[in-house]
Image 1 (cartoon, rainbow, N blue to C red):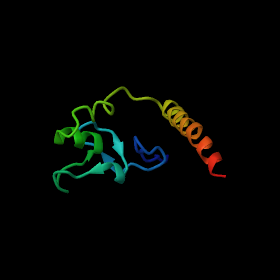
Image 2: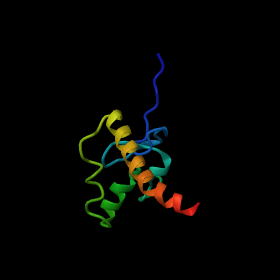
Image 3: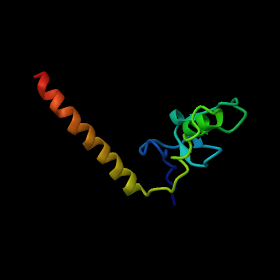
Image 4: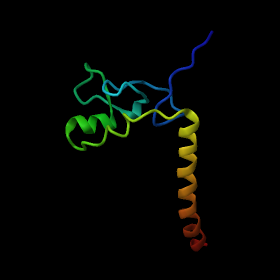
Length: 95
């Protein structure tokens, strides 16, 4: 029986390199920071910003309830469609 590796919570097609020590979610190498050195477990970027006091609400969006894969994919498709609606008229003016 083979096990599939966990996927990054932000980049759905990337394998997770580790887990955030604050929110305990899997993230890829690009999403993890070692803010207190390589000897300590990493933080995801929103949790690192929140821990540093840069944005007090940064980790709040990560700690909300988890959407399933279908919900995340639909959210990504909706964002892509919205970007296309804005970009297509601008591209038509170039030609």
